[in-house]
Length: 257
Image (cartoon, rainbow, N blue to C red; front, side, top):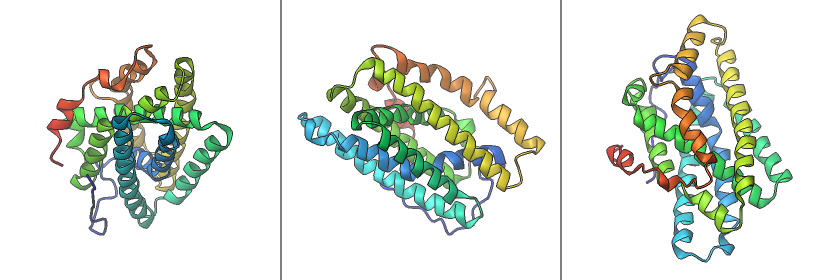
């Protein structure tokens, strides 16, 4: 389902709990999506001619449609970030260069594997966001609407990339190795971009930034790292498949954006 939002309205600079750290972490995550979504779609649709299963072909079409709309929505987000002085163009260029490097050095199947891994990472982050109403309540409604919409659709198409990967002969040891490589790229860029945003905003070396960062990432009740560790490592099970974990109730609970 397409999402169109009014980015011309007056929106708070620190839209997530009035916290520069939380806000810029999510801003940095968002800034990578326009280039990332294009890479995802290309990586999956490169194998369209090799897929004979009509159901999977239809799922691939839905995947492509949803990812194009995600790219559109986050481009509008990026335009807003640029208007308020966040150096998003620098991050867009870094993201473009990263995916260009991956495409130049890796085969199409490895690129599909990278997409499969990034889809797992976005799935577990989406599950986190939709599972923690106390975190949602800290977000400005405009941004919450975007993240909920995106998260729901990530859960809806969470299995497409891995289904295509396995259907075209992707092997299991390579799947697990690709996750380790992909995680390295993902964390490097996310950390680098968050630091850049905080630095340019004059918030990098503030005590509040440190406190918020440690709390949001590591508190045991709803910290990102404790909440994501177990879902992340499920990917390394030999029989792993995204549909083995049901998110239908979570999707239904948030279906009305």
